[in-house]
Length: 373
Image (cartoon, rainbow, N blue to C red; front, side):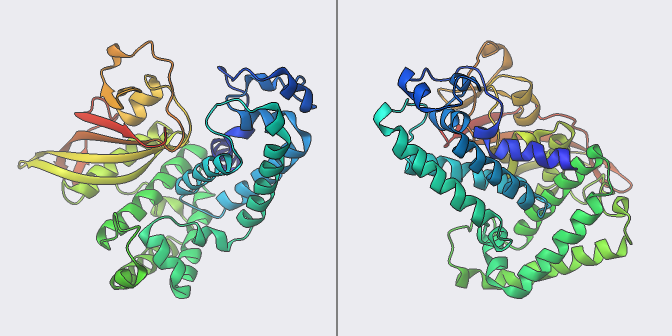
């Protein structure tokens, strides 16, 4: 379990990760102003912020404290992927506020000012992340905002989270990966049932009718977990079929594929919606739009792209491409890039419902990448 948390921390704080190839060429004077630059081979870092955190001891220490705070936060959350996305957005905003634009090299005269800004922002962020209330305040969904605004719902979610984490902690790493994916699917299903999808910018007063629905969900899931009497396998991994060939079925299928391929290290599923279906007596096909967010960089035509997004991508047009067309591409998706694919899933009827026959996402009917450039 700890290894899984640490892997997610690395994804959340790329500036603390091992150096990557294709770094920017620094001004020699920058290396002179960073005591650890040569020792840590900071020229291999991808961006100016990474070079500064790599080469300056005070910044490196602040980053280490932030990493510990992030690890502690992740240990409180069963669905960690939204927190990873939120932190990636913070990193981008931090860089912009400190005058770092993409991989544009810094001027020597700006180094001290940027270092001071990064240190202040990092120390403040660590203090904020250590506060358990931040988990609620950082929610970027309509359901999260509703829960945060209602003390009873917030306490109910905290109790459910604790129960879920207690059960997942009893599973081996492979089983835990599927359990985390299943929990994420629960929350997406909850948001669909409570009519909260796509309402992130709707005023809370207009969402109050969904509070009862969320309360019922939290109560039901908590009761299910208590009824398992400490046995995680009575909660997770039990569902292998969907009741109907619909959006929930497509979500179940793609969540299973992502968990099997460790896609949560790279992308998270943010939304699934069925756009069409063809249902027979024993077989069905469901076409769905699947929205994903990039959490860790990966090459636009790579095994990760194929298994986790179902396609290779043209980084310039942002459109899905056949693997053969871009097999030599070394370009990568930036963190927080948003992807949408359309995919048709095949189902077969069984005694317990409709079973997904897919074990990968490829090929997809269409795909488009946007944002996060």
